[in-house]
Length: 379
Ligand SMILES: *[C@@H]1O[C@H](CO)[C@@H](O)[C@H](O)[C@H]1NC(C)=O
Image (tube, helix red, strand yellow):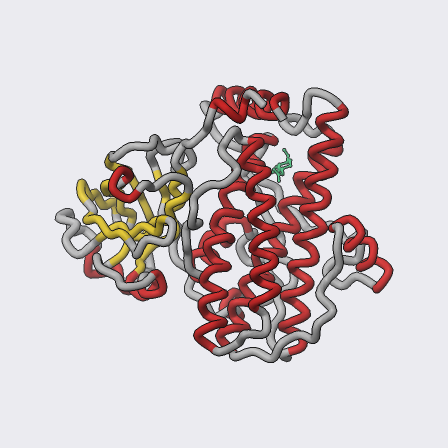
């Protein structure tokens, strides 16, 4: 582990040296390879995937669900298909020693590949489980789109996996809450089981990044619409073989975090964070465009299981509908270690996470506190 952490850190240092390159090449679009029949494997192909995943799909009958519970499964399928694409590409890159994805020894490479191939197969089964639930309920079931990834090194890829898995771990809390509200107890056991699986994967990525494997006593929550919005960044626009409105969730403009390595390594202290977003075409934003007081606008954070934390925006600047501003990051009072999920909102007081979506103009902005630890390096 120490070698991987060191190599990842070296790769990060090299990557930061090259960030001065003027224009990054446009990411290529990526299709999920069809060699194992995924997402429509034959029974033998499914057996092979399960073998790699170290376990099978549930053999319990798929539950009958309320329409909004089905939306949650559509989002889960949409997300898992992206994850399958991402880990397929990562496994391919490491297997083929693509520059940026080389590891120091064959032994380390084999270890990482063994683990990531299992993760990949597990994500395939998560996707198939969600697709099966949707088909059994005669609901729209997402099929793969084309994908694009911003990562060009093994360090960046693991850091991104850690980030999106943390968001997924928050989003699955929202799905569980929704099932309970709808009285849909059927999928709760299996969704809870997959939350644990994603948490195990997350602990491994965190160790590779020299972070403590267990992030917080209660992982940061999020909401379905924020996950659907964030996922759009990895989907080649227009490449899904269905309209994005087939999943009944809003898509918000992303809230860019400009401070702390684009939000990936924010220092653990109280500070002002800088944000920006493009509110072009957002009806609810029109009355704010051009107003530099920032009155009526807040940044609202999810952190752990705290109720939403809202702070007023300050230092507002507009260029057309593109707005940049700052907001305080109240780290000390709220112990905001790990992931915080930020939204630009038109209200500053919420009694529950689910209320934030209705007042959101842009989201999510992902803020991760740099909680690397020396101790794990040394093991
Ligand atoms: C795999 O490598 C290609 C080429 O460098 C890169 O564009 C892509 O983002 C990489 N995939 C992942 C998951 O990092």
